[in-house]
Image (cartoon, rainbow, N blue to C red):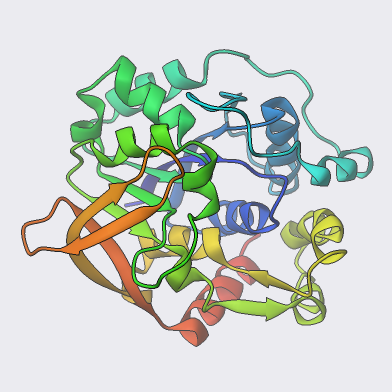
Length: 287
């Protein structure tokens, strides 16, 4: 049976969100129930998501969500990839202010069946769990690209953008509460030239266009978000450890305490070659 997935994304800054959405639309085992967008200019982000859905020939509900953090000033900038909207058909009108309720109704309509995949700041998810505290227990799983647990360093971007929200989400009790952190995702990279050469499938052509702003300043793509998504369908791509995650609600720094009975799982290893093969085989197999 297909995995039921809700995607919460800040598509439009780092190219990995678009790379991730292309994968989900191509993955034959994924039934993408909806997309919510988060942080600065969420309507533009919704339009970017709609580009890929249209290219894939899919009608997926898309809801712009919170544009600012729960606490503190905004950190994220509006999406530079929105420049590509002039070159691709896209939706322009979306239900505004309904993202949290859409998520709530969707999860309650499929108790125990939905995996919530978060690949951006956790503002929408924190609001969701505040409105309906039972919802975490109704998920099949909560899979997150966020945090950095095994190596020293500054706060990971998604957590740093709304650390208060992240602390609330990590305090929620889900049957599967899994994080794929920066310390693992940054092991999976590809140079810009090679990546663009491999964007020959129609679903990746708008991704390559959106990537122009990203590659103008960086020489590679790091598969942060796609790796988190792929573990829903191929968890063996990573090795996992159980324990407890803590979040500093002031700056988003994440801590990790291994514990056999801990409430969280984190990725601690990854097979980069297996992931790259899995990703491009999945996307190339899409209609």
